[in-house]
Image (cartoon, rainbow, N blue to C red):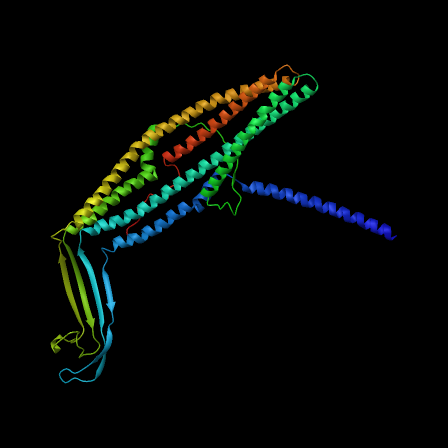
Length: 457
């Protein structure tokens, strides 16, 4: 009975172990599928993550906050300045019959206000322009990083598909090599046919490894653009395949829109405005400046001597308020102001030339990209028809190679032609997607942070 019980128990234990193992394998399979599914990432998710986590974009956002603080510095020229002080101490010694030690405290206040200064309006505008410059610098960083992430996404899709095409071609060549080996062993073919059928499959190993290496590099670039640490997380795998979408462009209207919409053009124009305001602020030293002020002293006790006073008439009699006005005008320039003006003027002229050059390059760049779009579309249509013909020819040849109706050389030529046309079609689709991305960048269609002038405060 014990043996039956032990055998029965052992059988039940093995059954449970087998069932648990199946459940474990099933859970492992589901986990692998889930990880694979979650690691795949779409282009929209790539752009969103880049916008949120890219280090360059984060740095540009911090620069915008810094510009807001710098704006206060420029605006402080027009604001009043107030000071409050409470000096206190002990007075002792002998003067005109006074003796003993007397404590005292004096409340002092000062208020100064600029009444006239040519630099005030230019300083206010310069502070606003500084905010706009920081905003457009953020826009430029966003455009550059989103464009970089998009190109890396396309590069990863392209090289992964290229690797897949070459592996498929290699598998066909290996099947042909196996067929020729069987024919050689059966005495239906000579050794040279078997050897020549083996070499092309081995040669594709280098091309497959190169495509794999470039794919991994694109993944790394994609992770860097998205702000992902490759040492802590797996590299993102792009989801989907490259798609060809024909695109019709209106060059004239898009050129006009790009001149108004592009962040780098707006930034160049703002640099010109900022340099112009800087020059005017420096030149304001040549003009007169008027300020007004109030000075007040509050003394809670009497008989307190002023510092360095020599008579009672110079002492504090009571609380008092004094008004004053100041008028200054620089009448002599030793080169400090004039040299600074020349330096600022030079910076403004350089910015103007840079802006003009950028604006002049936009029509040429858009015309070149539009031509690339047309070229890739024509190439894609031609290669699509050529690929269909090559696939049909390869199918016919593959059906006849096993029976010996087609030579091994003809089979390799057909397969090489098929690989070349399919790779060319993939490359045409890839180049078309790159041209679309360049078009979006050149026309300013990427995300823009702000176009509005900050309100005056």
